[in-house]
Length: 161
Image 1 (tube, rainbow, N blue to C red):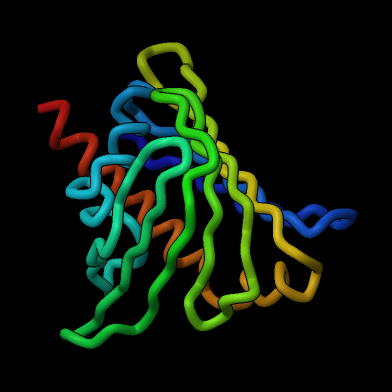
Image 2: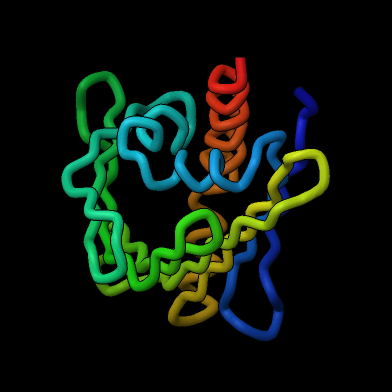
């Protein structure tokens, strides 16, 4: 397993965050890890938290919610809706932190097949304004994203054994 680079970029002209990451697994596997609630809870977020699914209806028009716990106490909760679910290719969903219920991000995840059975995941998050975007970037989300993708690498490697 190769250690992959996670790129997190903020566009200076529009309030977006783009995350790009490659995985040593096929798009079907990376997609499944995003839609199967049992798999999702194993990798999403930093290593210091656990994730608990509250609602998980993966379909176009479905809804989702999960909470993050640390040492048995809830530290954050998130919710949204699935606007488009195209198996193994694309997910479009809203993403809201319960602590900022007016701050809704629209995220598009694309799963691009690469040579050698690999995948490039792109996540484009569009938020209301630059202040919201900069607040997200300053929140430590980069650590959670990077550690989460490292955990996803580990999970995908186990599935390939």
